Image (tube, rainbow, N blue to C red; front, side, top):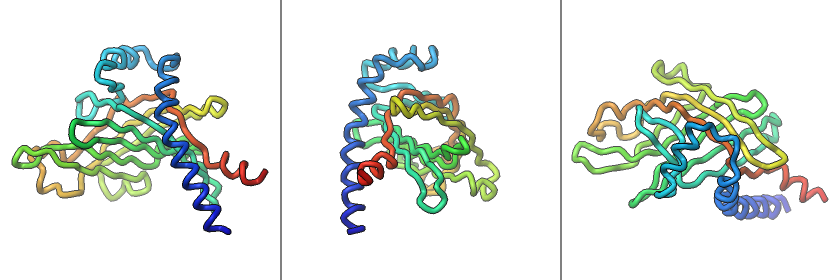
Length: 205
């Protein structure tokens, strides 16, 4: 019975996440919370369906879809918000994922998958991964950020600033500057999210 319950939850999450992108696009036209500077960049980039999100090592980076998921740890009762931004490319995609402790209102983990050139000039995916509880292992790494949930509208807003090192196939990189990325000016709002608490309430009825 427990396995059946878990299977239903997973299927429901997959369905809800599939609807998230459409909800995000629908809400984008009515968004009033976007910072004016970011709004100008959003409008300017609308032709290629890319919304400005942040700067990576000083260069603009935008996303083509975004969604969120709020979950609760059954042991600690801690709520975690995971926000994922995806940028579709001609070949493949890039992404930035942010994980927040909702109760403490802090950024706890970041994961970035970015295309960077190797020594032959060919692009390949690089992984930048950092948790807040392991910052002491990398003196160059840092992170901060906050998140706000609008539970009546099921949208999330937040910000982040972080520096993360690449520890995956770093010997292949053609540019030593790509060993470390600094993400700044990252602000978002109006991103739709699903909450696993909603699913639990449905099964209690």
